[in-house]
Amino acid sequence: MNTEPKRKFGVVVVGVGRAGSVRIRDLKDPHSSAFLNLIGFVSRRELGSLDNVRQISLEDALRSQEVDVAYICTESSSHEDYIRQFLQAGKHVLVEYPMALSFAAAQELWELAAQKGRVLHEEHIELLMEEFEFLKREVAGKELLKGSLRFTASPLEEEKFGFPAFSGISRLTWLVSLFGELSLISATMENQKEDQYMKMTVQLETQNKSPLSWIEEKGPGLKRNRHISIHFKSGSLEEVPNVGVNKNIFLKDQDIFIQKLLGQVSAEDLAAEKKRIMHCLGLASDIQRLCHQKQ
Image 1 (cartoon, rainbow, N blue to C red):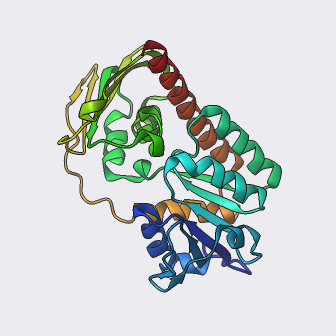
Image 2 (cartoon, rainbow, N blue to C red):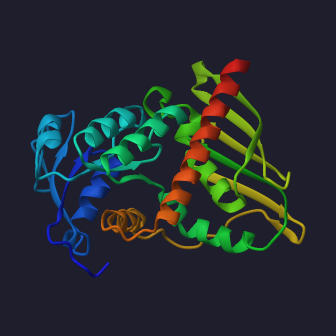
């Protein structure tokens, strides 16, 4: 990535919550600013400016010749609409996962990006984490017998962040990235709305018929935690040790996006990434359908 472009890509950040604020910080990184020029941010709140970055209206961001790229950092329920608007306007898009809350919508967005000749990049910082690197090394070359991944956290608003199979898609992405494409065996949902408690239990199977279970459990007082248990023919892994701080993972994700903008990612790698993303979104859609059938 040493070749500086003739003109920097003008970027607008849509949504300035936690992810959007980190994106604004990273866009000011000297390495990034060789390629990307932060034009402004879009927010439903009237903020005027943030960290010397000016607020601009959505209409101006869509219309502006200066803006080449949109970072979509809003709640998940609005991702699809924003991606569609910016692609239609001829802008490249980076979006925090999940890009959409259904497989069909994601398929349409990929088609639109291809039709417009624009980059559509779905962030997956979970694949850039030290824990994931550790798991990848542990799993390599071993024969899986069975595994489970349970995630606990405080409640999350489904209206904003989608059904748990979508809001928790980073856990599913871990399983697919570690063990290959998966088949859905069963999915159930326990919901105690008055207590703000939910538990989604999903049974999956690898191509070699090894069972994997994935549980998302959310409720008041539940600490944010991942519990992993993997049994191999040659032993087992019951926890991920503390492997250090995840440094600059949003910045690393942005580097991948810059490489795509500069045409430095091979067609094979892009196709493999899209296949994985769509496989996970397809599973999430099927899990949602199964859980709703049973309720």
